[in-house]
Image (cartoon, rainbow, N blue to C red; front, side, top):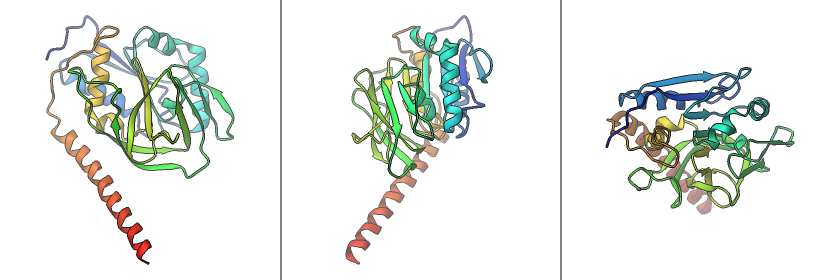
Amino acid sequence: MTTAARSSPLTIAVVYPDLLGTYGDGGNGLVLARRASWRGIDTDLIQASSGRPLPTADLYCIGGGEDGPQVRAAAALREDGTLVGAADRGAVVFGVCAGFQLLGGSFPDSEDRSHQGLGLLDVRTRKGTGTRAVGELVATVASDGPRSPDGGSLPRLTGFENHGGVTSVGAGARVLSHVVEGVGNGAGDGGEGAWSGRVVGTYLHGPVLARNTALADLLLGWALSGPGGRESLEPLDDTEELALRAERLAVVHESGRRDVVRRLLRRRG
């Protein structure tokens, strides 16, 4: 597998880390930049703070944040227009939690007032009425989800969710994955995240790309290729990353086993 030579650095922008940096999702940008540089690809990692024009980039990462900053970020991004225009031209956009919600048509604030999103994904989020979704999340990538450059399925996704929203995926987007453990979108269909073209949203924190290197490389491959293409990347030695992944999946498995034991004990009691 080869990576085509580029005449300019791969530009990765972490969008509004001052507003959407509550859960360490800015680490996704660092993971992408490091995985590119380890392959000899020149990168330019930009921390694109709010209050100034959003730069043009090949790949944008949008993280999680609280309700107020999320509302301000969505309004600023709509007014700026750069992100929507870049996505229309084929840039990769990756949103996590609040970043995922604001990529959609609408999302709620803490008072359950609806706010307009960017419309890059056909999803809508409402405020949940049940228990907040908090804990480890494991999901299997959907059969019609994003595929690796060789056409194969991506491995299971693992991360940590912490949200009170319920996100419904419309006909113009597809569910990213199906929940094995956790809540995910919470819309009743077992879905987690959504995607369309080169725009991907998920509730997985972690940072998620440190725990799911195949997903990180998929986004890099998209960003390194022309619109509609998928770049094959040289493999990396992911021994440490895979060990982290195995550790987190084992935690989820053990937690699930304890839950089963507790339920059986309650029945017998």
